[in-house]
Amino acid sequence: MIIRKLYRFEASHIVRNCSSDRCKYSVHGHSFRCELFLSADRLDRGQMVYDFGLLKTHIKDFLDGFDHATLFWEKDSPAYIKSMKEQSKRWVCLPVSPTAEQLTRLIFVACQAMLDATDRANGDEAARVHSVILHETETGYAQCSREDAYNEDMGRITLSRVVFSEPVKAEWTDPKMWDKLLAGKRFSNPVPEIQVPGDFPPKRRPSSMR
Ligand SMILES: [Zn+2]
Image (cartoon, rainbow, N blue to C red; front, side, top):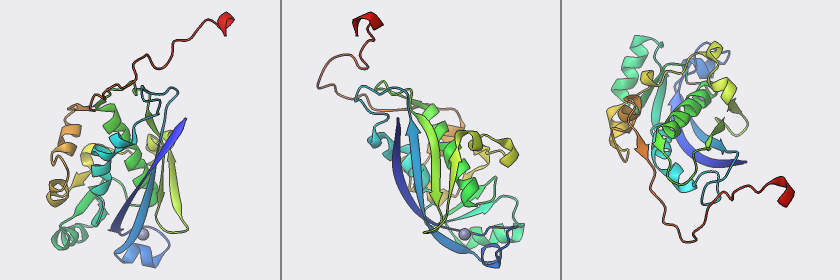
Protein backbone atom coordinates (compact mmCIF):
# COMPACT_ATOMS: atom_id res chain seq x y z
CA MET A 1 0.00 0.00 0.00
CA ILE A 2 1.29 3.44 -0.91
CA ILE A 3 0.28 6.90 0.32
CA ARG A 4 1.35 10.24 -1.09
CA LYS A 5 1.87 13.64 0.48
CA LEU A 6 2.44 16.78 -1.59
CA TYR A 7 4.77 19.57 -0.49
CA ARG A 8 5.64 22.79 -2.29
CA PHE A 9 8.64 25.08 -2.17
CA GLU A 10 10.01 27.93 -4.28
CA ALA A 11 13.78 27.80 -4.66
CA SER A 12 16.59 29.03 -6.86
CA HIS A 13 19.65 27.33 -8.24
CA ILE A 14 22.16 27.07 -11.03
CA VAL A 15 22.65 23.73 -12.77
CA ARG A 16 26.25 23.36 -13.93
CA ASN A 17 27.65 21.17 -16.70
CA CYS A 18 24.39 20.96 -18.62
CA SER A 19 23.58 21.94 -22.21
CA SER A 20 21.25 24.84 -21.45
CA ASP A 21 22.91 28.23 -21.13
CA ARG A 22 19.89 29.50 -19.22
CA CYS A 23 20.35 26.80 -16.59
CA LYS A 24 24.10 26.86 -16.20
CA TYR A 25 24.91 30.57 -16.34
CA SER A 26 21.92 32.21 -14.64
CA VAL A 27 20.53 31.97 -11.15
CA HIS A 28 16.87 31.13 -11.68
CA GLY A 29 13.96 29.82 -9.68
CA HIS A 30 11.31 27.10 -9.84
CA SER A 31 8.05 26.41 -8.07
CA PHE A 32 8.95 22.90 -7.00
CA ARG A 33 6.25 20.40 -6.11
CA CYS A 34 7.47 17.42 -4.17
CA GLU A 35 5.47 14.20 -3.95
CA LEU A 36 6.59 11.97 -1.08
CA PHE A 37 5.34 8.39 -1.28
CA LEU A 38 5.40 6.10 1.77
CA SER A 39 4.66 2.40 1.67
CA ALA A 40 3.95 -0.36 4.17
CA ASP A 41 2.97 -4.01 3.99
CA ARG A 42 0.71 -3.65 7.04
CA LEU A 43 -1.46 -0.90 8.49
CA ASP A 44 -1.05 0.88 11.83
CA ARG A 45 -3.58 0.92 14.68
CA GLY A 46 -5.39 3.75 12.91
CA GLN A 47 -5.58 1.42 9.88
CA MET A 48 -3.35 3.71 7.86
CA VAL A 49 0.11 3.38 6.30
CA TYR A 50 1.26 6.45 8.25
CA ASP A 51 -0.72 9.29 9.75
CA PHE A 52 -0.54 12.32 7.44
CA GLY A 53 -0.49 14.47 10.56
CA LEU A 54 2.92 13.01 11.44
CA LEU A 55 4.28 14.25 8.11
CA LYS A 56 3.61 17.83 9.22
CA THR A 57 6.45 17.89 11.73
CA HIS A 58 10.12 17.24 10.91
CA ILE A 59 9.64 16.28 7.28
CA LYS A 60 7.49 19.35 6.60
CA ASP A 61 10.05 21.61 8.28
CA PHE A 62 12.89 19.96 6.36
CA LEU A 63 11.22 20.58 3.00
CA ASP A 64 10.19 24.09 4.05
CA GLY A 65 13.90 24.68 4.57
CA PHE A 66 14.26 24.83 0.79
CA ASP A 67 11.52 27.44 0.38
CA HIS A 68 12.73 30.85 -0.83
CA ALA A 69 16.26 29.54 -0.48
CA THR A 70 19.08 29.34 -2.96
CA LEU A 71 20.41 25.79 -3.36
CA PHE A 72 24.02 25.33 -4.38
CA TRP A 73 26.56 22.57 -4.81
CA GLU A 74 29.48 22.54 -2.37
CA LYS A 75 31.82 22.08 -5.36
CA ASP A 76 30.66 25.22 -7.16
CA SER A 77 33.18 28.06 -7.39
CA PRO A 78 34.07 29.70 -4.08
CA ALA A 79 33.25 33.10 -5.58
CA TYR A 80 29.74 31.98 -6.52
CA ILE A 81 29.11 30.37 -3.14
CA LYS A 82 30.42 33.46 -1.36
CA SER A 83 28.15 35.76 -3.36
CA MET A 84 25.11 33.55 -2.74
CA LYS A 85 25.76 33.57 0.99
CA GLU A 86 26.16 37.36 0.92
CA GLN A 87 23.03 38.03 -1.09
CA SER A 88 20.65 35.42 0.31
CA LYS A 89 19.93 34.79 3.98
CA ARG A 90 18.23 31.53 3.13
CA TRP A 91 20.56 29.05 1.49
CA VAL A 92 21.25 25.32 1.49
CA CYS A 93 24.65 23.89 0.60
CA LEU A 94 24.45 20.41 -0.94
CA PRO A 95 26.95 17.58 -1.52
CA VAL A 96 25.50 17.14 -5.01
CA SER A 97 24.42 19.48 -7.79
CA PRO A 98 20.93 20.91 -7.18
CA THR A 99 19.30 19.17 -10.14
CA ALA A 100 15.80 17.78 -9.79
CA GLU A 101 17.35 14.30 -9.92
CA GLN A 102 19.75 14.88 -7.06
CA LEU A 103 17.17 16.77 -5.01
CA THR A 104 14.85 13.74 -5.18
CA ARG A 105 17.69 11.52 -3.94
CA LEU A 106 18.50 13.94 -1.16
CA ILE A 107 14.85 14.22 -0.11
CA PHE A 108 14.49 10.43 -0.16
CA VAL A 109 17.56 9.80 2.01
CA ALA A 110 16.73 12.62 4.44
CA CYS A 111 13.08 11.64 4.87
CA GLN A 112 14.02 7.99 5.39
CA ALA A 113 16.61 9.07 7.97
CA MET A 114 13.98 11.13 9.79
CA LEU A 115 11.56 8.18 9.80
CA ASP A 116 14.33 5.88 11.03
CA ALA A 117 15.09 8.32 13.84
CA THR A 118 11.46 8.48 14.94
CA ASP A 119 10.10 6.25 17.71
CA ARG A 120 6.75 5.21 16.31
CA ALA A 121 3.83 5.07 18.70
CA ASN A 122 0.93 3.64 16.72
CA GLY A 123 2.04 0.34 15.24
CA ASP A 124 3.31 2.18 12.15
CA GLU A 125 6.88 0.84 12.19
CA ALA A 126 6.45 -0.68 8.72
CA ALA A 127 6.06 2.69 6.98
CA ARG A 128 9.06 3.74 4.91
CA VAL A 129 9.84 5.98 1.98
CA HIS A 130 8.79 4.33 -1.26
CA SER A 131 9.76 7.05 -3.76
CA VAL A 132 10.00 10.78 -4.34
CA ILE A 133 8.83 12.75 -7.36
CA LEU A 134 10.01 16.34 -7.71
CA HIS A 135 8.31 18.54 -10.31
CA GLU A 136 10.69 21.29 -11.35
CA THR A 137 8.46 22.75 -14.05
CA GLU A 138 4.94 22.15 -15.37
CA THR A 139 6.32 19.65 -17.84
CA GLY A 140 9.33 18.03 -16.19
CA TYR A 141 9.94 15.99 -13.07
CA ALA A 142 12.44 13.51 -11.61
CA GLN A 143 11.41 10.32 -9.81
CA CYS A 144 13.64 8.54 -7.30
CA SER A 145 13.23 4.94 -6.17
CA ARG A 146 14.92 3.35 -3.15
CA GLU A 147 17.47 1.82 -5.50
CA ASP A 148 18.29 5.26 -6.96
CA ALA A 149 18.54 6.94 -3.56
CA TYR A 150 21.35 4.72 -2.32
CA ASN A 151 23.10 4.15 -5.67
CA GLU A 152 26.56 5.58 -5.10
CA ASP A 153 27.22 5.57 -8.84
CA MET A 154 24.93 8.62 -8.81
CA GLY A 155 26.95 10.26 -6.04
CA ARG A 156 26.72 9.65 -2.34
CA ILE A 157 24.13 11.57 -0.36
CA THR A 158 25.92 12.37 2.89
CA LEU A 159 23.47 14.17 5.13
CA SER A 160 26.18 15.71 7.30
CA ARG A 161 27.29 17.65 4.21
CA VAL A 162 23.85 19.22 3.77
CA VAL A 163 24.15 22.62 5.43
CA PHE A 164 21.16 24.88 6.09
CA SER A 165 21.83 28.55 6.80
CA GLU A 166 21.03 29.77 10.31
CA PRO A 167 18.01 31.88 9.18
CA VAL A 168 16.53 28.72 7.61
CA LYS A 169 16.97 26.74 10.79
CA ALA A 170 15.62 29.57 12.94
CA GLU A 171 12.20 29.20 11.28
CA TRP A 172 11.86 25.50 12.07
CA THR A 173 9.69 24.31 14.94
CA ASP A 174 12.93 23.02 16.44
CA PRO A 175 15.91 25.00 15.11
CA LYS A 176 18.20 22.18 16.21
CA MET A 177 16.25 19.49 14.34
CA TRP A 178 18.90 18.87 11.67
CA ASP A 179 21.76 18.87 14.20
CA LYS A 180 19.85 16.37 16.34
CA LEU A 181 19.26 14.10 13.35
CA LEU A 182 22.96 14.17 12.47
CA ALA A 183 23.88 13.49 16.09
CA GLY A 184 21.72 10.36 16.14
CA LYS A 185 19.14 11.77 18.57
CA ARG A 186 15.71 10.16 18.59
CA PHE A 187 12.45 11.87 17.64
CA SER A 188 9.16 10.65 19.01
CA ASN A 189 5.64 10.58 17.68
CA PRO A 190 2.74 11.38 20.02
CA VAL A 191 0.95 8.38 21.51
CA PRO A 192 -2.60 8.48 20.12
CA GLU A 193 -5.65 8.20 22.34
CA ILE A 194 -7.52 5.00 21.55
CA GLN A 195 -11.29 5.43 21.11
CA VAL A 196 -12.08 1.90 19.90
CA PRO A 197 -10.10 -0.71 21.80
CA GLY A 198 -8.92 -3.89 20.21
CA ASP A 199 -5.91 -5.26 18.51
CA PHE A 200 -4.94 -4.09 15.06
CA PRO A 201 -3.84 -5.69 12.85
CA PRO A 202 -6.14 -8.63 13.65
CA LYS A 203 -4.45 -11.87 14.55
CA ARG A 204 -4.25 -14.29 11.67
CA ARG A 205 -6.44 -17.35 11.99
CA PRO A 206 -5.21 -20.73 10.77
CA SER A 207 -6.06 -21.15 7.11
CA SER A 208 -8.49 -23.99 7.90
CA MET A 209 -10.77 -21.54 9.78
CA ARG A 210 -11.05 -18.94 7.01
ZN1 LIG B 1 16.49 25.14 -12.98
